[in-house]
Length: 633
Image 1 (cartoon, one colour):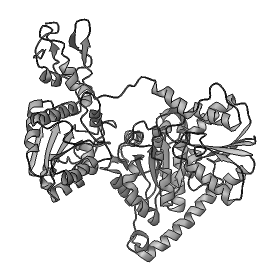
Image 2 (cartoon, helix red, strand yellow):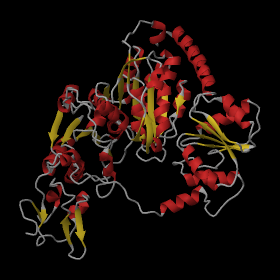
Image 3 (cartoon, rainbow, N blue to C red):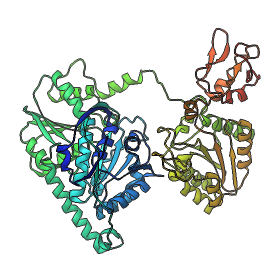
Image 4 (tube, rainbow, N blue to C red):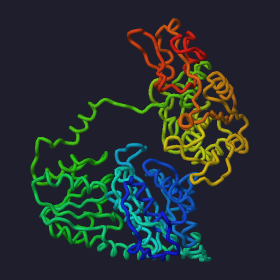
């Protein structure tokens, strides 16, 4: 797609550009909208369901600097530097990522921006791939920044373009809240042409605005921010993404993806409803909301996440002196936990009109029915190097005669968290990025013994370096295992500082983890191959005897890129005469490629799944799994 050179900053050229329809995921639609807004810089930290936005920008227009940052705090600060200089920037992260970026977010609200800055935060009601069901709309209220939320991929595309205009009109960052159903839904989206804004970066010195140590300046900027938010609220009262539909006396106030559920179920509910569809949870357009409430007898608020919108609507109604009953999550019409579905919305509307059908079920009944469904937990891939790391760790503790329930093993965020499942059941905690080391630090002090932390390479760069520094500084008795699979695997194999890779093909420097750890002052540092169980086990046993911090780097590339490159080597076979059917290989590794044949009472290897890692070969007590043999031999 050809870029339009020297497009005006207000994007008024939009009426002249050629439109076309494309089948796009919500994240792809957002990327198109950002490029059509003329962004010069995009960054973030990979996290489902937000990841594909940066990847799409990098693919569509590599000349835009679209690269991953070590963490969300760094990403937001870098993007702020770009926006201070008058260019447009985008930052992406998943829900919990804004916790990491919250520190600069608060000060950034006071300073404001010159170029448009959009902070895309992908919430995960469910949750599907997150630690919590955190609702980041509350960050808008906390930081006094506007929050926009789209309902579908087309609106996500259109709304992010409006977000850049809003950001520059009022000189504030805009929080762009999405949810999984918008990020990962695919739909036909009308897109335009990419533009390049005719701007040169300029940053002028302004102490009161940009230096937060200026206390008097902070009070002035706070006042400016409150006044700005009031102006934005006035604009939201008439902005085109907020609208009223229908003419009934029962009101529905809905935001985000659940708007689609409302449209789906309304024909099935025999009543007339008046719908207020909102895309601006903060600041709430109070005049629009209260005018709507004056036209209905009662209303229900339908939203994904916490009852944020419901609370805001009730406050607005109270302040306006309205006695219209407002229902929602707080009144039990919708569940406080989990993701909304069309059936939950339909049930809520049926209750609102005083009718129940056979299809209506209370939330606790739905939960019970779901509990009867078979569980399909995720597992580590065949050939995952983390399987070897944790097998060797558990075996080392056994060799040291340390009970598996006597030495805490702290986990972190990444594929290796799957070690919590049988048969390994290795990690005791999985908390937030980098917390494995911090938790181990604290426990080593009060428990008086070596505590173990396991952390991935990308997570180590994200937030693991600082707690390791503290362990060295205080000479804390911890063993940190850095599980280096040479990528950010869980979110789709994005590069990080330890890989030297780039999303757009730029040449970056690779940070050597071993050299970095030694530079921090760790005395015992050893790099091992987790496919070699014996060597890894012996290194762990050595490290457990070290007084003070010790680090083992278990380095082996994630098997998925290896498979994609077609570099899988020889695969082992089971010698049936030697196999006793003891299942030790299955029970010790949990590898999906190992299959027990109940008729033969033997184990066989699924050749389609096996990657030839050899971990099972090292766990068989009867030497029945061999390399170098023909199948069937």
